Image (cartoon, rainbow, N blue to C red; front, top):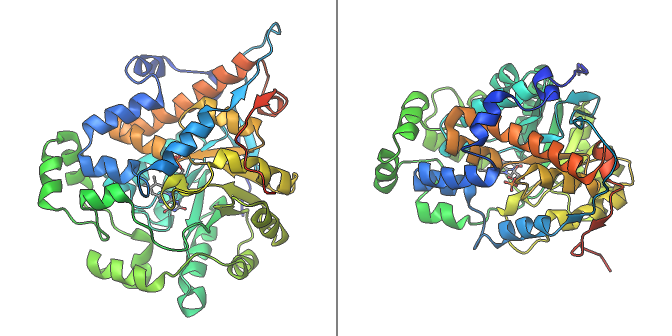
Length: 410
Ligand SMILES: Cc1cc2nc3c(=O)[nH]c(=O)nc-3n(C[C@H](O)[C@H](O)[C@H](O)COP(=O)(O)O)c2cc1C
């Protein structure tokens, strides 16, 4: 892999632009993006991006647990604008915030895949393409050549022929990391998707059409881009396969979540950084490290798979302790501000990702939304670091932290 080390773009280093300050008057926080997305999007599109499993209690637990983490500041030491650039796996990124993999984000906002990838490239933050995205690996690499990661689900048929080929394709176009998702062993019910009538493959119901007609900007974006497809699979299912057959093909090929034996086999063929997504238990951290994985991604899928898990911020300290510096710790689920990013990093994360926050940006602002979401994260990270009186993210780990709900294994 071509490990080009790059600097954060000048715009990120220089601090907030005048355009950002102006947009801040309408969307001062990610919470405002969410409220605007709720009003502006057709109901089904908002639910597709915003909803979780069950009664959304897993989502609420992630949020509440993050909100409860307190950082004790020190004052009296004058500091300049804290830097936000960080290095991860030999790459220099503009900030320790990246875009988590999201399948079919085109339901939330047509052409979301490409818009997210381009914004990530502009800000030099990671963009993770989902296996089941509307954009192919090759297109993602064109839009985000310096920051593109690939996420993989399990396709065990024919000795993992499809999964291995996807991995080779990612290597061929210079993907910077491979992310294996372990936390979707079974399909679960996303309540708001079901109530909205969302199916796989995606089909417009009369109710959805009525909702979409009430949202002119969504309709215009949809007319330009059409129904989201599973672009990575045309190579295997054929170019002329309709959405129905494609969906059946993917269901027939996929099966369960990766086992540790699978991870070992992917480790053999993928030479770049390998990240395991969905690590919550310290023993899983140990297992992944023993297999040579460089990244442990603490995630509960943003509360979309099961409601009864601990908040990821509560599982984080156990994974950090188990890894003990032997792997990089990535973190997501519930992150809605630069303050949340600093909280996670103060508790030992090396890098943070977010999913829904970027979809809210798209829903609120259309194609300019992902840029504003990234800038909000960066601006708030800087303000938080400055406010707690530390120079950078590493120093934030020395700040006294109150975090009473950390998960302890007896
Ligand atoms: C619409 C949507 C689709 C998702 N699809 C995938 C996926 O294809 N693969 C995956 O590993 N995670 C997927 N996730 C989970 C995210 O990668 C991430 O773990 C989660 O969104 C983080 O929580 P947050 O949304 O609170 O930031 C998806 C999340 C959302 C919101």
